[in-house]
Length: 107
Length: 118
Image 1 (cartoon, rainbow over the protein chains, first blue to last red):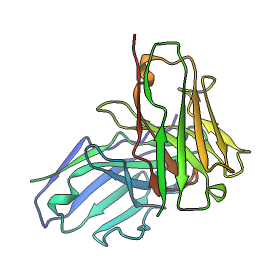
Image 2 (cartoon, rainbow over the protein chains, first blue to last red; image 1 turned 180 degrees about the vertical axis):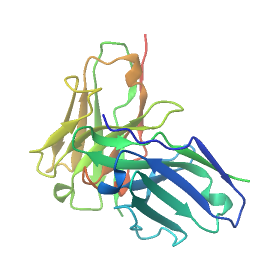
Image 3 (spheres, helix red, strand yellow; image 1 turned 45 degrees about the horizontal axis):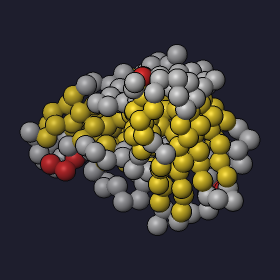
């Protein structure tokens, strides 16, 4: 089965850049989607098809995908960005897979 | 405004059954693919099942295959998940989410809690 590996936690100071990785075998050949989930709330789509942003998502959120790693980048991090982030792909052998999630802490 | 509202969760004994519903509004439900995603307490997201806009194509996670059945009624703008032979490990908040299996899910409901316990 296809496995997506995310770091359990990432910490960043306000105003700095946070990078959250999502590792998978040849993930660069797949489309990666990213979600933000705050405590007690449903997930929110922040990046789809590797690097597209839904309307209403700040330009500070961006995504890239190449080789064995996809990356969600959050620039000029704000306190309100503190949340869990999940990557997601569709794999023909495993169907739909989520990464284990990364807790972003704003110091 | 797009809204997805889940209902039907609750406490059920192991081996029991439950039917979840998701009422959709604010968009043309019959044109969209839908999914169920669950989240066990304190854990990450787990995709459960997908259904195409017409209902002709369905996928399940291995963990629920043979026990859960996804369906939809486009005339009633509703998505369903029939859950049978429930196990303790099925305890989770269940979300319905709009989107293609290969794409991102752009709208989610608020979730309904299913607790499987004796």
